[in-house]
Amino acid sequence: MHSGLTAIERLEAWRKTRSGEAKIVLGTRSAIFAPLVNAGLIIVDEEHDSSYKQQDGFKYSARDLAVLRARGLNIPVLLASATPSLESIHNVKLGRYQGLRMNRQIGSAGKPKIQIIDMNVHAAQHGLSTPLITAIERHLCLNQQVLLFLNRRGFAPVLLCTECGAVEECDRCDARMTLHARIGQLRCHHCNRTRPLTWGCDICATERIAVGAGTQRVTDELQALFPETKIARLDRDVTSNKGNLEAVLADVEHGETQIIVGTQMLTKGHDFPKVTLVGVLSADQGLFGTDFRCSEKLAQMLLQVAGRAGRRDQPGNVLIQSHYPAHPLLTTIAEQDYDAFSELALAEREATAWPPFSHLIVWRAEAANKKTARAFLERVASTAKTMANSITILGPAAPSMEKRGNRFRTQLLFQHHSRKTLHDLTRNMLQLVRDWPQARRIRWSIDVDPTEL
Image (tube, one colour):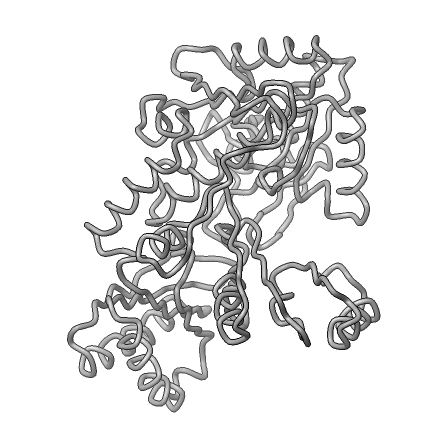
């Protein structure tokens, strides 16, 4: 059960599930709502993954619903992950969940060896350092496969004029346009606005340059370095056409593709037996984020992509490029000690009273006018303060990207150690807010247990 099915296929899957003909239901996030006539077990694989949270429209967490549904059906629920969420680890510590460990892996290779490449001392061309290029060549000579991870699609993230310093920005979002050189296009990856690619600067007519590297540019550079090697890209641009993903994965599995360059979808549990080298081209993007979960997400992402190397009998190697090689998070990841990371991260969360040591509800508003959205949430905040003094209210404040798709966004955060207190306040507030005239002039929503701030 998934969104790629046709309406008829989806109906047929629902009927087989509802009748009990289907003994196993395998699906994506929305499959948690599947009718189960004789449920025995619910499994949530990669339970830490933030994609289990529906962010638009009807907001829900498929993982949390799985736990709730299993409790109602009085059946076990298995939350599986090599890098569990801090919430799940905390629930094990409290005795709410039972912790089970898999201490043995398939094959005899053992854990891959992780090394950090200091980008301050090594030369690089289009995101590829000299040690990484040397390692790629060595593994290719042994007829092994290489996987390179870069969480940035396109050719380059910035089109810069070196004369006047102007960069190509989206006029609908607080974001720069990404260069897609092969199709001669500039594209905003947030609102999908496109413009034809012109190299001349609109302000001073100087020829502009592409700064930084995306998956497309890295693939082109690798093809120039290794002209006889078959290289495949795996990102949203490539897999948007039906059948492309399956074709790429089949070539990798059969050994026809020797180097795979891709974005975050490479971390999603793929099993590539011949991949013995994984390169992370930039680990720095997640080191200094504003979201309190950014370090957790980076640790999970790095360890998940590292787990693609050496999955059978050949030992795996992982090279992580960074300008901050001594960062505590990276040194902990290099030791592959997720337990040590989680202990430290949970201690930080407890000291700062962030989840799982408190609960959050976020009110979000957006409007064509910045002041309209902010005024609405300011009224929500002032009204809430008269109804509950013990609750921490932060904001309203703009998110990391305030303008998106020509609409201005703002958010208001409610925090308290009691989930019931937060829910009671939210229900009482809803009864009032729905009658406000200004609530009908903007888009607003409430996000319980948000995964992104």
